Image 1 (cartoon, helix red, strand yellow):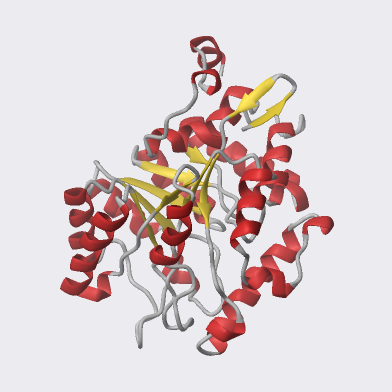
Image 2: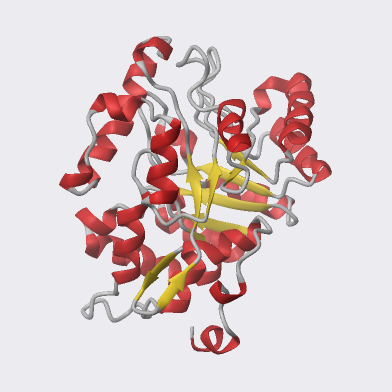
Length: 334
């Protein structure tokens, strides 16, 4: 929970990781390059006093994760989004099992999501069922640009992807998080194109497609698709840190999102450990749309409360204390 000027905010960090990118776990130059690319994002978009060393960035201890997210970071609930990258890392970069081990020690703090890859065929479908039973999955994180042997990506609209989305429905997994937007070395930019969300969202109206990174730098494509598909949401990971280095650009991003999809379909994400949530939350609560950008609606306190936690709480059936919910009056004036 975060409190400022008498207003309290329930915080759900809907995109966090517990990764191992140490040299011992790097399988090849791609594993080294991937974490170095993450580190460049961290170093270039963070406030100077929040920049870690590369060694700190490669892996965080359990104590540090708890401190960064919950002790210092105001987070009430955090959602692990696994990224396997088994072609680049010996034991995987950030798997359901690795995140789940930490979540089992702190069940009141974490939710664990699973993952699948349509290129795994029937065997992968069976694995998905086992993951869902083991971790009681409510969500899935997908990485369409992940390499697998000679293949350098896949699409949500592929026939085998539909088999997996049908399996998600069968298993009661409704939240489909998909990385769409920033290219990360050595993955291919076009494999992160947001266009395939359009087809899948239309075909599966009972699933929710949370487009992580809101498609940046293809924000306009994302907005047009999300406007016509009511089951498409915007995850703000990577968009949030621009509040520090490029506040006017961030105002344009959040202003466009408010215009096209509104305050009910955005979720806060620190993308930990690329960034820590504390400074992002503090700055977002203080943030106002600049007066010169008067084509955008003001960002109200009620809207900030929804984005910082209430929207994700709704998607994941997280119980919000009564005093942190929106009152009917607050909703009406939002």
